[in-house]
Length: 143
Image (cartoon, rainbow, N blue to C red; front, side):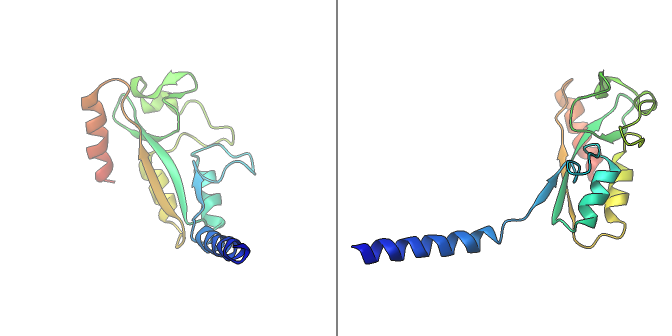
C-alpha cells in the first residue's frame, strides 16, 4: 500500500512539472506592472516583446467617431470612450506621455521587430448597443 502511495505521488509530481512547463505566460494589458508603465500602452507592449513573452493581451473599444482604440476600461479620463471622439480622448496623455493608441498603431508596433510575442485581442462589447458591438467586430477584422 505504501509503495502505491509513493508511486502515485511521484507520478503526480512528474505530471505536474511537465504540465507546468507547457503553460505560456501572456502579458495581460502588456508587460506594465514591474516598470510602472501604463496598461495597454505601446510601451507595455514593447516591454512584453522585449521580454520575448509568448503573448500580450490588449483591449479594443470603438470611439464615437468610429476610431478603434486600445484601453481596458470603458472610460478613459472619466469619459465614456464610446461617446467621445478620438481627438478629444488624445488631449489626455497616458502617465508615460503617450497618447491613447489606436488599433492600427498597436498592431503595427506589435509586428515591428517581433518574432516571439503573439497579440491577443479582446474586443470589448458595446455598452451602448448591440449593433455598435457588431460593427466593432467587423471593423476589427479589416485591421
